[in-house]
Image 1 (cartoon, helix red, strand yellow):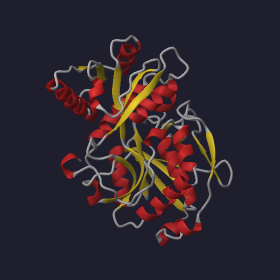
Image 2 (cartoon, one colour):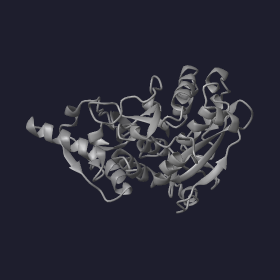
Image 3 (cartoon, helix red, strand yellow):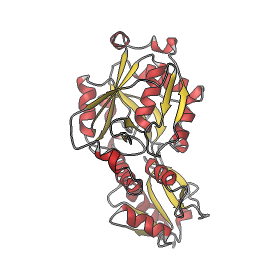
Length: 342
């Protein structure tokens, strides 16, 4: 399956954050193996899922009470109910992409926002979560072959993917601007606020395409936006702290991660606004992904909506500093990235 452009840019952006995060030992534990690595999860105690375990600072460790909802688990396909477990696919090999999915500081536990959310959903469904880590490409092979039931792995809902998969949305697919914490500038969803600014962006990324479109619009209005490129993440953040650029435009999760990692340092950063990874016409969505006609999308969406209604969803996002990617509700197969941009 072709990798979605926004996800490539996400990995670039999160790699940038990783450079300042001191996660070398945990990431190295992922290795270069393309085969799936499996871990069976056990909650700290019955009726509780611990978010952010061994996350090495990517999340605030939070114990969330959650238990089976019989009316929702009754919707599951018979074979899945009989198995008693939910096989969760994560495409984080070889290096992981914090804060979403990576090997934790114990060098064995797959941690991050995505596997943790899969564990919460499994608890609502009354199933034991079994997390399988693979490469991104093998993630879809696992769904196709039935080796995994559902992927929680930053998969963008696209019309192209709907030909083979069904979705239950759970997070916005956003880009973001990061600025020094002391900066008073904010994007406010208006490209005209970029006039006179110097912004860094990754070359060949979805956010570069969007930024250059804004630059062209401003030029027609007689205004200037300067776009700068750097070879690596350290250079980007040195330029930001040194005042050589006003902002960096990249994937929101990686920026949220960087903000948390630098919060108590002289070079602290903050998010100055977000923008849909799908562009102006559509809010991009990240979704739980199952094989088409598997019968899983509805119970998954119902489980997610239960977590939203009862506050556990907000706790999960807050733990990972991703509250600005919240959705009001989970939808089954919502409008996705169009076929001409998938």
